View 1 (cartoon, rainbow, N blue to C red):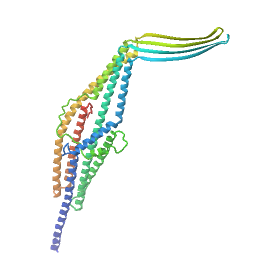
View 2 (view 1 turned 180 degrees about the horizontal axis):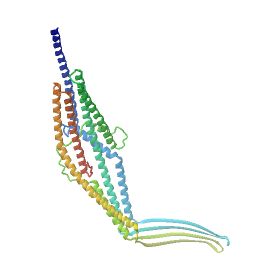
View 3 (view 1 turned 90 degrees about the vertical axis):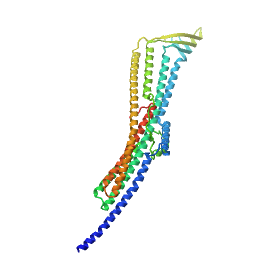
View 4 (view 1 turned 90 degrees about the horizontal axis):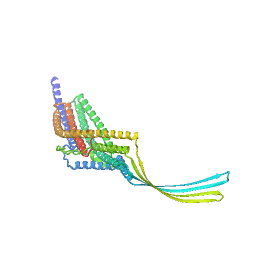
Length: 474
């Protein structure tokens, strides 16, 4: 009896071993086929091994240019700046008009009736007159020229504001497009990582059913899957917010699907980045803030000079008048009838107006002097910000470009580690946790490389804006 039972026991063990080996081979085979294809597609989409001049990269760049063109033509604040500049130009014309003479025409008519009840008399009076006036400014101490200069300076400020707004919309649209592109590519990475985590969890379930793994493997794999799905949901929210930010910069549109093809292009291919480290030796021009401070400082100087002229110089004006009048008097008295008269008169004057004391003018001059000091302080601050941001960008871009090679090597190493861990898991030499760790490390390395590319692209975009005069501190 003992022999028989022992024989029966030895017959069952090879069957169990054969079944477990079959299950392991099948599960490992399904894992090996799904993961490489998925991740290779993601790597291609985010441009980790493709060239800058690939058709996909060129299509993504062209999509950004069309989005910028749409924003430049439709964003509401640009219309505001256009109207502001037009108003400033009309003010220049108004200031120039001070050199033109003032011609006016005034007329009046009057009728009067007087009754004397004691003498029983009645008198009527009628008067009509028309006066033409010519006024010409002879001398104002240069204040007319000062008003023109101030108006032109306001026009120059409006032009700077207009250019600054256009450059800001250009930068904001490119930045929003870059962020949406980054979030879309990150969404692909997160979805691929979640799919890998689901496959590993499914593998753990099946191995648990085959009694090749413990319950702890299933719990670990399930926890990793849940975490991966949460990352997908969180990044999806970020992607939607980035899309809303981008579409809001495109201005009001009659069609909700406007520019949809450009937006779809950004969702399937990463924008290119320079493979070689940029030199960044270009001379940085003055920023818009610096230009505004210089123009404001000059306007304050003109206003202060204008105030002193008004305070200490007299006005001399020429005034000429010509009046034509018609009078009629009707006296209801014996021997007196209707008396009519037509008269014409002319006069010429030189008028002198000199303000000897006005505390309001003194206060205005003090205010203009204070505004000039404010403009000087803003100019110094603008130059300091430009210098600081230039140094920061040069340093960051150079170092960020070096980090790309480091993070790329880390991704390749993580990929080799994952492949090695997978083979060990297939042979049953390790448990599922090292495989989960290796898969997570590969995903983290790819995300880190992608983040470094985005940081480089964003700072290069800020450098390009700096070349146009726009300082966007990082």
